[in-house]
Image (cartoon, rainbow, N blue to C red):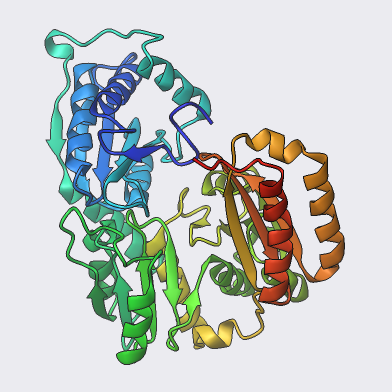
Length: 449
């Protein structure tokens, strides 16, 4: 990861950590880079509903046209819509303005290459050099200056793709959706309704300030209540930019990414659509998921945390299904990024195809209790190299044996050490997590100011 671009783009508080100048320079560099060998590069820009979205959308566009690109503004849309359209409509690159599940006062910039895949690291590092003034590029002049166009009807291409790729008949299905007051407001109800479902929507009135506020995939409590009280067959909670999904079964139980990978993996295996019977997960997937995979004849590969790494592993070998516990699920061969609405459609396809409820499809999956605690530290490397801490981790691993696990890792973007334990009981999780976090604090590694 570079100075500004993490595993999911640049992100920070709008006009503080993420500034207007930064966005202009990102737009300028991309406009220049892709216009070097053609009259005008074609760049697609989308955004979510947060207040600062239009500010960054227009500053990116201004930067790009100033160095020769033509820019198409998709308006409010899901992140996967940008990825899909860039890869299928001859765009040179795409930009999504979103801070995903973060509060409204944050924003972010995600960049996709011409295939709709997250931009290559070497390109991002060159953008960062320009952002820091280490390099210069020429501005366009005369007829070399680009233009920008409002292209909100481009979103119909994405919705048509969803309905064509997963043409599931939802007649008779009663579905509730929590749109997080975000990007899913532009696509979810229209798509599900067109496939025949009766759709009830909550958190579907974005005002720029309420994206992700006590709603969506990070706060699904209201959706859980709604599903039960209104006798819905299923509920879907999206995050702010609609690239992840948390489902709710008819009993109001949360169905996170681990559950989704299990039931979709089994269904795709039965349909002969799971290459090598392989599912790609991150190291944070639940131990119970792995035990269920082994029992049911499914193989798995673990990657570092981040859908970027899941995609890289899938693309290397052509594996069809992968994702994260957070609800980022990728169906390689259909899409190249996580997509909450596509995942919802695939779940509905499995439900109608098997004529089973989510409860029936997941009855053999036992999820182990899991506890994650973060410790803010002065230096992550010193903590991870400490012999006493490593000895404590090794002791916990031996104690847990085959009935649990401990994972200690640094955050990729913050000064945090994350300690996660899975075990047969919550009490054991707390015991082994605290055995490590307490030691970190006892040794004076915690950052206290």
